[in-house]
Amino acid sequence: MRALSNLSIHPSAIVSTEAVIDPEASIGPFCVITGRVEIGAHTVVDSHARIGHEFGRVSIGMHNLIQNGAVLGGPPQDVSYAGGDTCLTIGNHNRIGEYVSINQGTEKAAGETRIGDSTMLMAYVHIGHDCRIEDHVIITNGTQLAGHVTVERNAFLSGLAGITQFTRLGRYAFLAAGAFANKDIPPYTIAEGHWARPRAMNRVALKRAGFGPEARRNIDRALKVFFDSSLPIEAVAERIRAECDKSDAIAHFLEFLASSERGIARR
Image 1 (cartoon, helix red, strand yellow):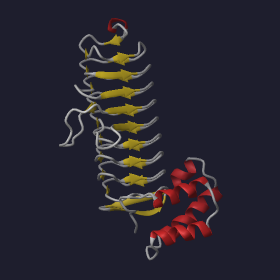
Image 2 (tube, rainbow, N blue to C red; image 1 turned 120 degrees about the vertical axis):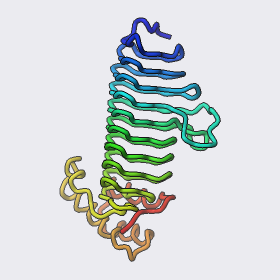
Image 3 (cartoon, rainbow, N blue to C red; image 1 turned 90 degrees about the vertical axis):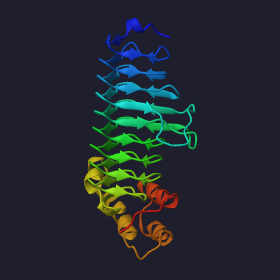
Image 4 (cartoon, rainbow, N blue to C red; image 1 turned 180 degrees about the vertical axis):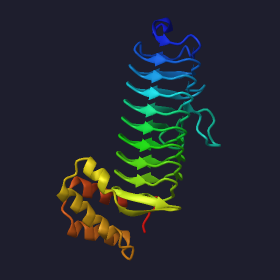
């Protein structure tokens, strides 16, 4: 274990003897780091953050900014949790805003809450136990995720939205401000409402991400079939296979529909 005196740790911070902190990380004033916590190089922890707790583990990668008041790796808000050895894993190049809270996983699932790379979690966001947030996700102020939620890469969640347990948001999906999702939101769509339903293709995000005109038209053809609510999901999939060009985007869309356990949100 590295000697804490060699690190950039403010003298008012309280750091566990079990913590492993890279010499190039920075821990700000009045932070509390408890238990088995790893923090990678060039990660900056602002003042008054709390990371880890008596049980479980927290692993934080490199080049993260953790802003003041964040609470990371607290025990899961699950009445069955009894101090199991579960974890929170946070990747690289993330920005975690003021007063964000992220709970560790539970033994009911894989035992891990995971945040990917290059995400932005804005102020007062809550990420519940066993959630999986993939790369390049943006979650804006005050949005709340219950346990076991999956947010696929490049999704965007607007402010004050709510997502119930086990719900998924697909790649490049956009969840509007104030929406509440209790069924899976398909990739490439804009969803809104209480309860949230997909309304249109997320054209702006796909164009910004480099999807060319033909790729966007192909996804649009698939979504027009999907938006026909008279068709059951099995018929939607059959028509998409018949009418759309094969591509990675279409393959992922079909896999998302087929693997839904929560049910697919539709118009």
